[in-house]
Image (cartoon, rainbow, N blue to C red; front, side):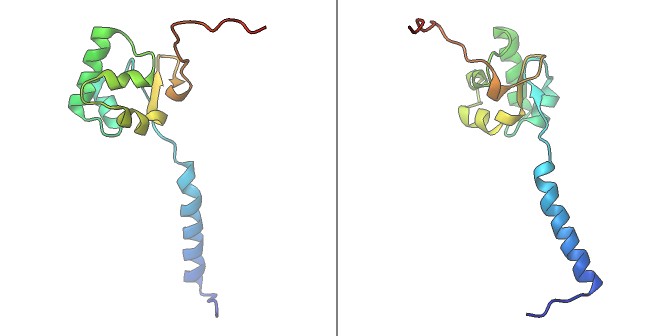
Length: 114
């Protein structure tokens, strides 16, 4: 197979390499579901439109702040599939704790091990 040394070929190879390297560097925008307005929730979260964003805010106002990303599934029209598809976009609280690292809540502590 003969390779071409044409400048256009070199340019195309360089462009292809640049596109391959640029893909993983794209950062995902995140949103604090306890303080964001409806427009921001609508823009950042996947499969969450204006009506669902308003429902998130109404739920937050009626029930207090979300303690975990999974609590979003309590909002009408939002299921666990939507929560999972947005896991890397969801922050909990003003401290900006990623949802994947939010502390799990338990109702009882395990007894100490001897």
